[in-house]
Length: 288
Image 1 (cartoon, one colour):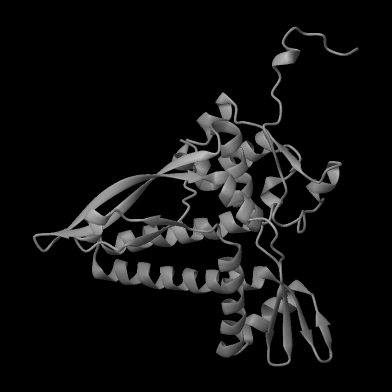
Image 2: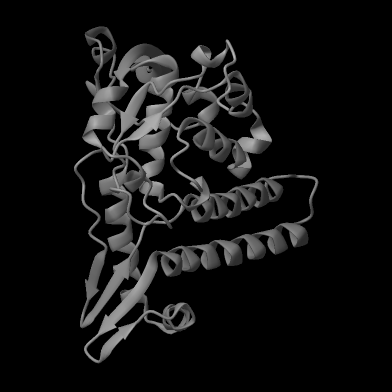
């Protein structure tokens, strides 16, 4: 029997609908096929979500982001498997559903006063709907060629992206150890060796994780272990060609910057006339 609670009419309703930039590709199950329109309903954050998104440990591990996406975009069954090319669009849509289409950002402005470098700031208003619209209509071109080899690549999942982020964070902590004057040089040298080794392995692993197949004149290899062995023994030029292709894809799919026209009084003091403002996705501030 249907629940006839008097609270039923207060159940949350979708605030906006989102078409995923990926078109639903790269998911275990295409979430866009679950709706007749192909658009995903996006709900506003609950009070619990807003508390979760401001918990540092949960943010660092990715758990907070995953839980909020499950709550606000329930058509995505497993946010960990979501391709990272959809992440920014989903987070922007959740913010719009919760706080509206406008967002204020503080823009730092470097200028000179009596030959001394100063830093001022201006508040600008960002139209998130415009940014979200610019993220649509893209096509994933996962083909990188080098010589007679063709590399088929996919975007990283959110799980993979978070894992690499944690490795980077650990390396940053090691670099802080090296600056500690209380630690002797032998320990610093050991920390440097460990950090360099981890960074090198992470750079290699990121490329390997992106590649799903290597096409040669003799055929195509899709075995993960064989692809890993190939990259562990290939020449520098081949590795850099694939890495450059992946960086190009990353730039193409990145959230577009906003151009800010700097006020004339700052420009007269040596500031740039136009500043490219990157969209920051530090969840603690983005969802403030």
